Amino acid sequence: MALLDNSTSEIINPDTYFQTHTPSRTLIEDEIRVKEFVNKHQEAGRKIVLVTSGGTTVPLENNTVRFIDNFSAGTRGATSAEYPFIISVIWILIFMHRQFSLQPYSRHYTHSTNCFLDFMELKSDGSIGVNSKYASKMKFVLEKYQEFKKNETLLLLNFVTVTDYLFLLRSVTKIMSVLKENAMYYLAAAVSDFFIPAQKMSQHKIHSDGGLTLTMDQVPKFLKPMVTNWVPGGFIVSFKLETDPALLVDKSRLALMRYGHQIVIANLLTTRKCEVVLITRDSEFQIKLTEDEIAEDKEIESKIIPELVKRHYEWIRNASHTGL
Ligand code: PAZ
Image (cartoon, rainbow, N blue to C red; front, side, top):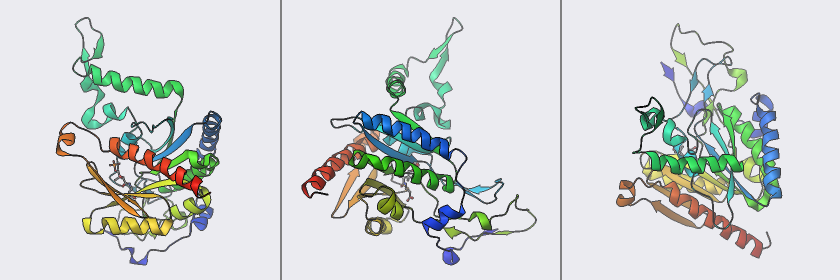
């Protein structure tokens, strides 16, 4: 039996974390891609949003056979990325997601309960095509997807472990910091809270000849260095997930006060697809789908994103008034 007890968990500071852990082999290559992407769109005067999506894993062995995962399939991130971040200018997207989790547009046809084969049919002449029942929705999604690809307005990056995620987040946000107010950071990934530091981890596969007791350390709170050092003055929106409704708003507000960013979006595991609360320093704003909207399959992200874009504009306006 695995024994989990967080009372003995150690707290490592972020600098020590980065000094004692190794980034993924693709980090340097990813940094080059992000720099090119940011430079190109910055020169064209565009705004860029970073969306993080999906869950991070926590390996139990350095040669990883086993790892701890979480429930997130990346639905929030992939769905949000499809709702145009538009008021007067189009936002460009960096989509940093868990490898093999849902992606914008393809998410409609790749999930196991929504297999793309179910949308196709064999024709009498032996060719294959899209079943006419689904053609109009598929055409809509395909057009949007091809537009993204043609205009190169979507950069995909992926991570697997919590360590991959933290190194990548630090690099991407530091590179994006040149965009100043022309950027938004939308952190919807479900990032592990506990991990086993590399130096304490078993090198090889843990033997299965008895029970297993795990002692895990706390993952450093990366929002603090992100807000103060990586993108000082950036417009940062984080998500807070809870399962206990009595704690949700207070814990979300605490995170906002502790890290000093702009918005925390509070959501409960059970109702996250139809109800969230946007928490700022001086307000709480509920976004909810009505019964009719739920019946029409409306997605709550179609209400969240325009609200955030509006608030980003207000934030720039207020900042320029106060000379910030
Ligand atoms: O991926 P998904 O759509 O199933 O879940 C989204 C979510 C609940 C992970 C996201 O809305 C969220 O709350 N992310 C932050 C989780 C946290 O670290 O508290």
